[in-house]
Structure formats: structure tokens, C-alpha cells
Length: 358
Image: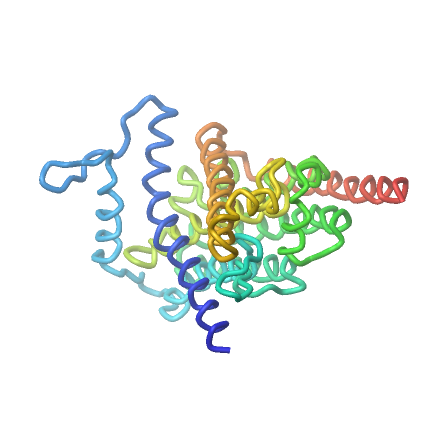
């Protein structure tokens, strides 16, 4: 009992450290450098310590200090309670989704079976979508409670956009469930040890639709109409400053990691290496004993998993700095008139193929 509790606590701390402690702050710097690279600029390079800039990495510390020390401003006429809790409502679901996201398989360490997932739910995929959809309330409340027309318009756009693309995401996932026959993310990941069972091969159309809908759900360019600076100042977080403003940005970057993790598990082979099974890797490290070989295998799998997540994060950044913002009517048209019929057709075709093969 105590061993299981200790293992669970270590997994929670690891996920928290990776998402909040590493990805959330580092991605702010990577985003700046990536945009600078694509626009032939140097990027963030002003913050220094004793004259050392280290490629602008000290901007991460400068941003954190700025967020913590800036005045927490609440506009006159705003609902103070809702204005305060809305960033928390937006951030917490992004973190909770990782409770069921596996970042490795199952390993034998010191005669104890260690499963690299905090909670291995039978309906893990359903849990991810149920929790992720709660973030919508945070954005809607933020806009409504600010007593600002721009904020309210931004929150209304957020609600309609997220609801629209959640339909496509849900229908796209049905094709994945039909192929793998499980909603358990660990099982879906384990099946993909066979390279040709990767979701990107079994559901190629679903892969592109899910990626598109995920970016729209995260409200990033070209789907950033809810916070369009040229139209709505800053959208739903126009009246936010300091730490609460930073929490909205943290939620966005953590959602990027979440999207990368879910895409990796469903479509890109999870933690597996193409044409290299776990049994083969274990045989290479037999001389280290059961615990040693399993430990090396675990580290390799965790590294491979997060390498794939980083690939999807990079892909989202490239898309952001490549495409212009869509008009709001174009976003709605894409969601309801193009992606929705395609997702329904994908389910139909998947079902017919499964029937034909059986």
C-alpha cells in the first residue's frame, strides 16, 4: 500500500515538474525563438545576468518575475470572485488531463510492477475530453466577469468555437475506438508496439482532423479569433494582469503539451520505437539484470514519448507562425460544414472496412 502510494506521488510530481516546471516556462522562450527564426530575426536576447545572455534563456526568469510582481488589477464593476477564480478554472483542467495520460508502459523494478500512468482508467479517453471541456467555463466566466465588451465578445467566441470543434474531436475519436476496441489509453498505446498498428496509418484522415480540431480547441493561430488583437484588444483576458494573466498563458502552453501527448498516444505509436519491440530492447540490456534492464527500457520509452510530444508542439508553433488568422465565419464553416461531415464519413468508412475484413 505505502509503496503504491509512494510510486503514485512520484508520478504526480514528475508530471507536475515536466508540465509546469519545464514545458510551460521553456515554451515561452521557444515560441519567441521559433518566430524569430521564421522571420529572420534574433529573437529574445536582452535579459542577462552579469552580461551573459545564454541565447536569451534568462527571459524565462524575467517573465516569471514580471508575472509575480505586477499589480493584480480588477476593473471597476467586475465580479471580483469570478474574475479571480476564472484563470484557475482554465488552468486546472489542462493539468488534470495528465492523470490518465500514460508516458510509458509497465515495468518490473525491484520486484514491483510500475505502470507509468497516474490513474489507469478504463474510460481514460472519455475522461480526457470530459475534463478538457471544463476549461471553456473558465474562459466564458473570465470574459463575462470583466465588465468589458471586448472580453465578453472574446468569451462568446471561445465558447462557440470550442463547442463546435469538440463535436469533430469526439466523432474523430470514434474511428480510433472502433479500430482499437478500447478507451483505455494504456491499451491503445500497448497495441501500437506493432509499427503498422499506429493510428496515423489506421486513421490517416482522423489524424489530420484531430490535429486541426485540437489547434482550434487551444485557440492558437489560425484559430485565435477569441483573442484577436486587431479586433478585440486581447479577447477574454483583456482585463487581466500579473499572475492571473500568466495563468491563462500557462494554460495555453500546457494544453499544447496535452495535445501533443494525446496525439502521440492515439496516432504516433505512444512510447514505442518503430520496428523495435520492448522484448528486443530488454534483451540488449540483459546483463544489467531484471531491474536494470527494465529501468533502461523505461528511460528509453519515456524519452521517446516526450520526443514525439515535442515534435507535435513544434508542429503547432510552425503552423502558428506560417498561417494567417481565419475570419470567424471561416472558422465556423470549417468546423460545421467541412470537418463534421468528414468525421461522419470517416466513421462510416472505418465501419465498412472493419466489416469487410471480418
